[in-house]
Image: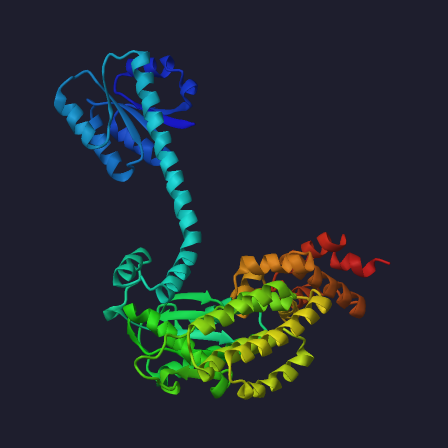
Length: 518
């Protein structure tokens, strides 16, 4: 309901309008009256009405002065002006401050209510527009991170993207780069990993390098790609990359290989990406977990073919799930693309070896070493067809075994979360958000849904239940009921009263009552 303030120095006018207009019929209420602009201004500042119906000529502060002052401080308040004067200057002055309704006295009920209805319609339209813009901004805040990721993917893979695209999207995302000099970092997690680990290593990298340095980041296939805004010298960059790898390894027991491009203008981003992919192909020679730069890669001649780009993730996922029909068709497609590239046998092997390693990692752990030892047989293959047959046969064996033995396993992420809860049960800061940001470097909403799916219990409920169970065990074991010690030991800090409330809600007893219960 809209609040209306009525302002006029003539009492008979105020009483007449107050009693004549049926305010509720127009979704309004008469919030107050004032005799002049000074009283009106005081009322506005304390009660903030939506609509002001005011005479123009009043002592102290007239209606036009009131409009000007209110428009400056509270531009959302609407005005309807009344006057016994018909001079155009009054109307023109009022219109400068957004007043659309200027009524000549004496005016009847219909004239006032018509103006009131139009003002309310304007206010409702403004509210609708504000709500629409709020919803748009809310949706954009959700979409923007995904848009940035998709733009980076297009920037490094789409031949048509150039300086104009970077300028347009840079303005859209408020990204500026001095002299357009950038550098690419490409991370590849080694060993069996879940898709969530890619987000973790991306977040760790952003924390170590600094969010001001990392302009854009995304995942492409099984890789994490970062675009950084400055060319960092090797002596400074390598320690940071080592720190990223060590932090990731500490929490997830997985290693990562990092490819580093040379620096250059943003328009060379696609070439930089191909260079980093080429670097990753040399991990077979340099070892997994290496930090590989263009210096480590043997250069070919100027007419060398473009890097062969292939996303292994869908293939590996279907091998892991035992979908042989998909795997067989995809391998035929992969080797067809490789044949069309017209690379010689040795270069083809450098692309097939990483694919083969990724495939065999989808098998049983006790069989992986056996498959890896067969890499030595690659030296005996002199044709692409021989390579295809060897890889296809190995993939079929792994698929069939996975199809027969595949069972759902408890998520490694959830195991880590439960382990953190056990270790941090006395920490008052323990929460889903804290674990997500400080321990796992992952999205809190996603972790919450994953935890609920795996345990059938919300994270917060799980923590409270575990704390209460441990508290009950402690009371039963020691017979001691020092509530402040229990509160501190089980994550309630210096708030024993709240601990007792939660304990009673969980058990039906206070800690003291629980001790005496049979």
